[in-house]
Length: 254
Ligand SMILES: Nc1ncnc2c1ncn2[C@@H]1O[C@H](COP(=O)(O)OP(=O)(O)OP(=O)(O)O)[C@@H](O)[C@H]1O
Image (tube, rainbow, N blue to C red; front, side):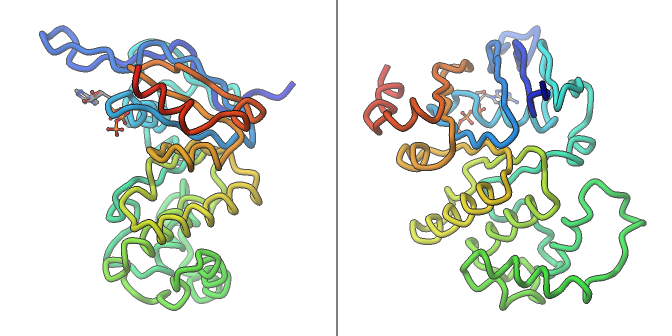
């Protein structure tokens, strides 16, 4: 039997330990993610969604519990070490790209994720056609701005680039942290569509946090409800297909 892509066992995180402000954020998370799972995650503000991503991404250490990637214990590995198999897209379009570098240069950098910088060949010209083709798949004119510094892009183009960079060198695990939340509805829809296409076609393993219940239901093969640092529900594809937006809203009213 193959190992799960990612496994969290009784993960707890405590902030401000030993002080009057000591708070347990994640309260014993058990989660098994299989190869090809596309999981949407919903939950109230402060439920612990971003903290869960921080623990998976390695920017926050779990205080108790275990984390395994393909069967290997990764609890002690750093955020940088995890970039060899994990990529994340944030809500803020300013994060994830280097503003003075062009679109193409950012893509070249992303294609070398996890490799030592000094080994990076300067082969931008050879890869331009490939990068331009990928950019065109985002359906927002990014392919016409390949030599533009990313700081001059629209928020939507910049997020599309962040997504492309995260997926260019196929990650084992892709974390999407409300990556369309800062975009206008049309641009957000466009990026979500492209996101879904890429994840589905490339059979990526992905987790996507969203506050849009319709999107949580529409995309992915699994849906998780996080509340007060705990997983309150974990629906498989068949169960998810029966869920309604009102069913999900009920979790926010309790
Ligand atoms: N470093 C920290 N120190 C103190 N409290 C923290 C820290 N990080 C997170 N928290 C608290 O932990 C709780 C969970 O935060 P988190 O950002 O994970 O929630 P979230 O579900 O992503 O919320 P949102 O939907 O608002 O983004 C919040 O109450 C937050 O204030």
